[in-house]
Length: 301
Image 1: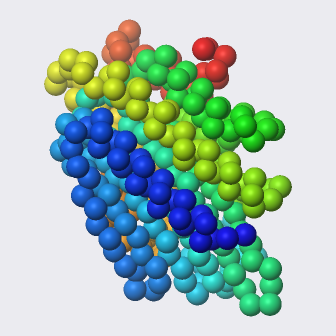
Image 2: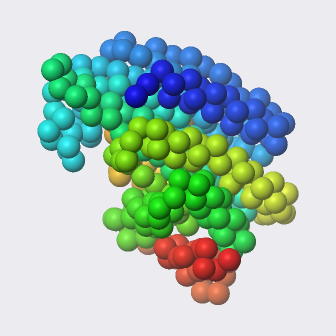
C-alpha cells in the first residue's frame, strides 16, 4: 500500500482533466493552492464565465489529522479516535447551455491509522450526470462509458455501483433522483489494494470520454429564457442534495477544509419556486417521467 503513489496519480489526473476541459471551453481555469492549518492542503482549479462552462471546479485535496470527524465515524464507530489521511480529486461542471448536463466526478483514498493496529484503508468515488433536458443517447453513452471503466476489472462492478449511485444520489426529502445516475462506490477495499487502486484509476481515466462528447454535442443548441429558467429551478435540487445529504461536503466542512473549494460545486444561478410542477407533455415534464426514474440505460442502448 502506497499513499504516495495514489497522490501522484490524483495530481496528474487533475492536470489532465483541467487541460482537456480548457481545450473544449477555450477559457482558462484559475489555479489556487491552499493549506489546511490542521494538516495538509490542496489545489483548486476553477473556471467561471467560460465559453461553455458557466462554472466548474476540479479540486485536489490531501488532508490529515489526529481524529476522524462525525461524518466518517457515523457508519464506522470502530474508527473513532483514529488519525486519518484523505486524498482525492473532486469535480463539478455546470455548463451555461441548459441542454448540456451538469456532471460530478470524484475519486478518493482514505486511511484511518491507530498506533499498534493495522491501518484501515479504502477507496471511493464515481461519476454521475444531471441533465435538465433529457437525451436518451446521452444517458446511454454516459452509462456505457461507466461500464467500460469497470469491465476490465471483472466481476459485476457496474451493476453494483450503478445501483449504489441511484440510491446515493437520491433526494429523500423530494423522493426523486438528482439525475440519471452513473456509478458510485465507497468503503472499497476488496480483494486487495492493487485491484482497488486500478479500479479507481479506471474511473478517473474514463471521465473525459464519458462527458466531453455530450457537452460538445449540446453546447450550441439554441435556447431561450424558458430553458434557462427551468435549468435554474432544477439546479436548486443540486444545491439541496449537496448541502443536505452529501457526505463529501460534510466531511470537508467538519475537517476544517477550505470552504471556497468545498462549495465550488454549487451552481452560480439558482431559483426555487413554491409547489411548482411542469405542464404535462412538455420537455420539462419528460425530464421527470422519462429520465429521473432510475432506468437501466444499457438495456435501452
